[in-house]
Amino acid sequence: MTLTMSLALLIPLLLGLCSILMFVSLLLFGGISPLFVVAISALCCALAAYVLTRWFPKISWELDRTPPDKTIVTVFIIVSAAALMTFAFMSWRQPNGGWDGWAIWNMRARFIFRSGENWRNSFSPLIDWSHPDYPLLLPLSVVWLWKAAGRETAFAAALIAAIFTVSTVALLYSSIALLRGKTQGLLAGIVILASPFFIQHGTSQYADIPIGFFFLATFALFTFYEKAPNANRWFLVLAGLMAGFSSWTKNEGLLFCLSVAIARWLLIIPRRGLLRIARETALFATGLMVPLGITLYFKFRMAPPNDLINAQGAESLMGHLIQIPRYTLITKEFLKMAIHFTGGAAGVPLLLIYYLLIGQERKTAPSAGAPSALYAIFLMLAGYFLIYLTDPHDLQWHLTTSIDRLFIQLWPTCLFWFFLKVRTIRPAEF
Amino acid sequence: MRFGSFNRTRVAVLLLLSGSLFSNLLLFIRSTRQLFWKPNSDYAAYRQQKSRLEEIPEILAARGCRIVGYDSDRQPGTLEYYLTQFILAPVLVANDPTRPLVIGNYHDQESIRAALASGTILKTTDGGMILIDRSPGR
Figure (cartoon, rainbow over the protein chains, first blue to last red):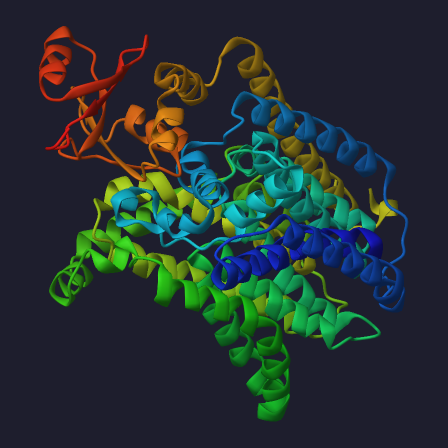
């Protein structure tokens, strides 16, 4: 189980590290030499070998070793097989991804891969419609695979999309299984695999599933730090690294870093005091600072201003804030979307019924891991609400075209919180 | 009969499993049908635009061109423009017909005639794309 969890964390982590090293190489040498690609690939292999052979056995643990229910295992296998085939079919049908997939992320990768020393052209204001201010984790991961393969191939972007989608499912399943038992982990895995929009959007090669993975990983690592018998401080450093990678993936990651910090402070200070939070924050910041620093460098030194900020002055901002119909419209859309953003039966209403029938877990020791995830989700939603409120674009259009993607970013973390909170069923009960 | 905790658990798990299976299999059926009977319109447009451009990317590369203008008799900001940029990257495709070198994407004869008169034609593709040199000292 810990192996599944380690692999689910390790592969996206390596992609994040590679993208940062590639960016540093572009900044320092104006390009990415084949030797450099070989060097960072070797470094990744060495790191992976170290984690799997040295670090992983030291952290091996499992809080609940009850064997899983056979019916639930069978359903999990069916749902996984169908989801994998669906993913393959959809990726085959749209090799370049959905609209934003090719027009933003893959196009940025093409610019960097093809332009050599002129790679900064990809942030030109001439193509401001392609959001040149978006961070580079995804495009540079694609470029890394292309460089390693020696040519461009649509398969690389589809592979990265698959890595993040599968890693999200694997991390959700394994982390819940470690903390609450395999049956509970399988149920969490089934729900996410059966969320049609999650699978469908995974194939679109947008950045929403990768950023959702980093959100989930941050909270899973926080919870491991508090719950694992051999609480390892590296979990906090890794949580910081994952939060930092979310900011290097998409702009919402910056809001996430802030939300996580506030959520942790709100929970830890009253319970365990300032000294504890200071120590925890220092470890978290150790992991956070490199990817967040790179993101901020990119934002302030290279990228053009963001369209949501640049397109309006203080006057229009205030004007938007006092328009009551905007509040009503956003609230209505948020509520509507909360019910059906997964695009299928496996969504919030079904989980609510499940919770009402099953009840919540009573036996667990108090922990800040799950509540901080909930606090952060609410802070993120409040942040999204404020962004829509001050949105310079046509509000209805912007809500229609983006709100489902914002909700799917938070979905894995919501499920993580939910399956920690809801009572664990025992095979004998079923 | 009292609806006890045992029955509640069974109903809850059955609901969760059946709802999930239903969503999952429905998406699987839909994706299978789409793969075989409904080609992706964006990808079809991409392939079409790529074939319409023929060897224009190579000509631009040979000339060391970094920015090219774009002119069309269709509304600005259409799928064809975005696809042209995606295909031609790392050349920047400015949605601006006044650039010295312009890619013309015309669909009616009137626009083609006007384009032919507006500069030196460097390439006309079978797909109806025209590379025009509109630089002053051409």
